[in-house]
Length: 632
Image (cartoon, rainbow, N blue to C red; front, side, top):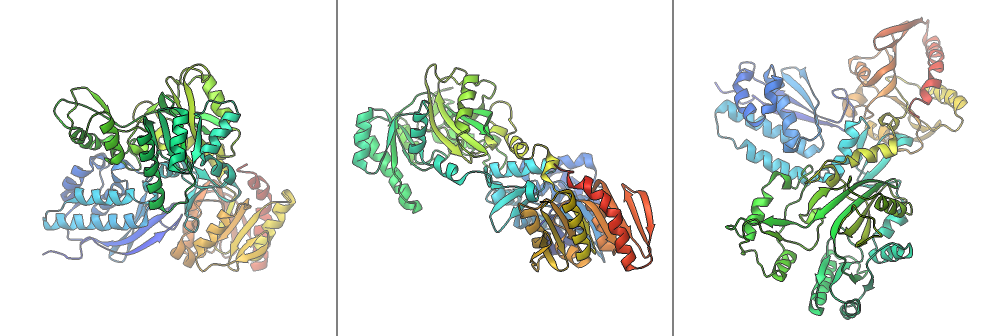
């Protein structure tokens, strides 16, 4: 008889950081499995067909197969960095916890898998692949669907650098307290606002480069159509028109050969301004520079990568039209246009049609076999351009030149766009022009170029700030019953070692910075986050009771010292966040036991509560001196 409750899921719960179940953010839910239902082998045929990677892992039970399959669904078809799950029990239910990136996508993934397994039970048709594809398309629209943001988050996670999202600020934070790096894409809190703003104005950047004696195309910022035409006639055709403030090649028209072309390009930009309701700040008219488009990247003022960018193109086969060839090219895995694909889709628009017309072509034209047809004037990856790693080809003089530019800008990442026939030749010998400078440049194209070796720019960005992954942390003491007196004692002893230390504590009374009350939110994880977000925090103490752990988790990933004072079962889970070689203080009715990695170092007996606290603090004092500088 069919059991309608089999694979029913309910009681969803979200933890935004480390928690009772996992040492990372987790979606937790209950699931009922019919004890009289089919064994795991019954489902494996269907699961292994979709996820052959699970064949070698041999899930041994139905619930293990369910959880393992859920991880593969959450990874999407792009191998997102999601790996951990746990399985527990609650009454007749299993309790499953899985790591996740996006809450909505995670919930929908659980529901999708539940429906799929139900359909297998009932021998019903179920389009799992189609529904999963829709889910992946939804993920692509989330914040982490952006390749640069995702690659930076993954770079932190892979190096065990703590990463969490600051909802109130709509940005991510890597690292804790004083060690933190905050940002979105490659724009970080350490960047100069004025320098970031300056790079957005192409006319001023051009003037700056010219002042420095560097090659930049001559041009002028124009504020009317007639002024743009006059400037083009003065410079001589061909010319380039582009908005003074813009990015990703949006609104750029190159190789303009006539007054009519100038007027048309000018009005395209004007219409874009009107549609976006942006303030009109002018349109640059500048001389055309010939060569191949290159993006040269610096991190903390040092050259790290160079990429050649070729405009989107198709190769004829003598049979298909240009439009059909574009559709064929867009079906390639390399153009999935998601958080992990090297290239974006080639989009058909007016700019493409205009450029084809200039070449005497249309979307219905049939190119000859092996004939290359370029589809756009610009080579930006976002416009379907093709990326080629040329980091090992760039001439040392060109490296010196880009580093000399980067030193003028207090930004972590700088993308310098140049046009040159040959990046392997010095900039002052031959055709070479600096087109523009970009703060907050995309970096995934360096990590996954269409052609050539990968340059792990996201990893280099992380290490440029933290030097070593462990430097992202601050010393943390966690416990289940840390008192105000204990927190104050720790602060006083730390001040004796480092007088200006930034000390933060979260106890029952609320958040304290350097012993002074700050605030107390109803959400325990928000209180933890405030301390980790504070840029002065160098040492933190957190007290978590069982109710707070159940409702909010720990949020912070780890602890150097854990103090458990007659803990209940939930509070015992704090041992799971104790770092390797961390120190555990376990207090029972009349004894304090101190251990490292399960090896008991000492046991201290006490008579009453006052005696217990004094002995605990005395045992803690000599440990603080080594701990305070642990992550420096």
